Length: 163
Image (cartoon, rainbow, N blue to C red; front, side, top):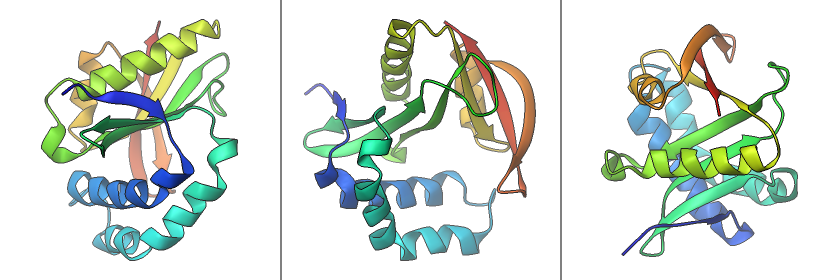
């Protein structure tokens, strides 16, 4: 069965909040504080509420569904707060057990097509230092252009993609 990319729905909020907490706990263990990661797991209900309430404010938030299960997602904006004339991918995640099957690239390509349709030719993605996804972004053609602090504490590498 092939995965489907579709717009996030309000009814996805609880499952997506759980997936976000799960991915952060598997991806960032040893990179960010355990206290922060545990907090994500403990606040899934609040996260689900925030997701429900933000649905109209985040028009480019898509989920990747396989056999009626959210296995990944991408959220992007058509403008970046930090980089002029660029779209920004704020979130691109695949559940650990589904990584390595091309799903991340599938989501990235979907976003890139949407961004290009809006006549934007640059995309920015940030990735925490120490996250193996840095290699994924380089493999996709991202050029490292610098870094900044995420949550004023964690080094985040910034990649530029020219579409």
